[in-house]
Image 1 (cartoon, rainbow, N blue to C red):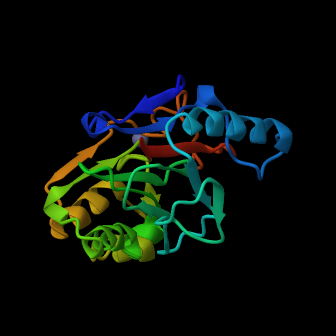
Image 2: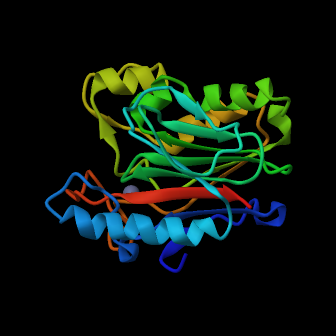
Length: 230
Ligand SMILES: [Zn+2]
């Protein structure tokens, strides 16, 4: 896709992954922007992905820990009822999550098994990423054979949370609001789960607000994390 920040880590396995940028426009249907314009962007993306895979999976995101499993040989565009993650054990399923400060988490195996997660602080506390790695394991893919990439998201300098949330994320106490590096927390979770190859985008949605939508910066717009093993 033209207006996107690519993930190079799994390209050699025939896995395309990227995060769209502000220049690609917002993919949020729940704003004052006409839905027809937003849906046109979705349909355009869908057309582009259709050249790589017959299936396209998205979901209504609820900051939970559910991961939709895409195992069949269906074709078309699936919108799961409520899920913050997608897993496909074999090639042919494109997937997308909407983000704007939350972390798009890309997981890949050289065989073409993929997972894409949407992890904010609730997802981090719920250990959505740990669950994702467990799903790979349940399909016979060991954690040490996975690649993990944490895409553009709010950085540790920009993300201040309440003492309660800070405690949940770090296990440490603070009396006042404190800053936390969400991708650092997620990288630790992946590492503890046995993943050795972990990379993180240097880009922050708020520091780089000219390139990305940021909820904290006041944007209603949302970009997409997109992944497909062709
Ligand atoms: Zn920042």
